[in-house]
Length: 311
Ligand code: C5P
Image (cartoon, rainbow, N blue to C red; front, top):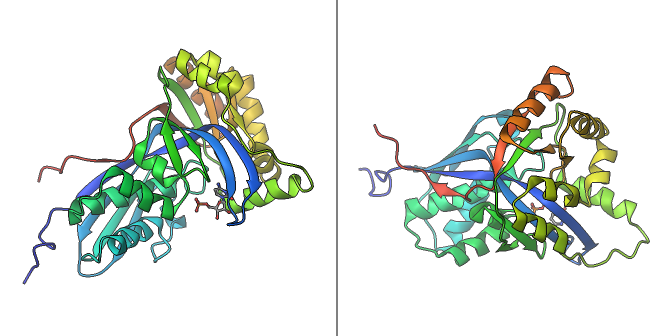
């Protein structure tokens, strides 16, 4: 006999990638994480997770870079589902189908997007009725960027990145993202490189910059460009020097700014207009600098349930 849950409709959730407009890294804390002051922007590159009641827990992955995503218990979507089930007192198993568009290990929080999407999808399938704050708290247990992937928009992140508050950002920004042609970068490895580079240095507690806030209130990409900043950029470039060449080429092709997204290796390129983004995308690929580029605008919404597909 099919249980009520097994006959429940699967739920699909989309969650966005992010770029850090500013990423200031503080000293390493006792728990191993670094205190951060960051400004996230959600951008229109999405992963989708479908949660379907099933006889046993499991997940499958399709889409971009699918081969490099684990489908065992270490999969972040599955970790998220398990954590939510535990938190809400045990739930029926689900199978999660993850469809990826966000580059894996790219510095765009793809794994975090999958976790956020799984949380929202399972919340809907199970009817757990957790509020936004409770979901954000579960999200924070899974990864530093997961609460932001739930919320989206443009937001300041503090703590280790998991404490998120919205900021006033006007305008639409036109981005071109250049994923690495080679391997992704491991986030812990980039933070370790940051620590080695700053050994013996008195790293200050990070603070958001007033200049970035003011640029975001203007809504002008030309005001945003000069104040974009990422403390991890030198470390990502040291680990993968090709990143530096992509940045230089993008600037040469007329980008307003080009910088490392999060812990890299994806390079975020800011254009003045939608047409400018198309031109940059063409120049970067036609010149052979980039094998592949992705265009997106930001900000976009955080994780959201998609309407059920019509059968
Ligand atoms: O929180 P998340 O699991 O995404 O972090 C992955 C790794 O990145 C951590 O284990 C840590 O090595 C590093 N990290 C950090 N400080 C942060 C966020 C991440 O050192 N604020």
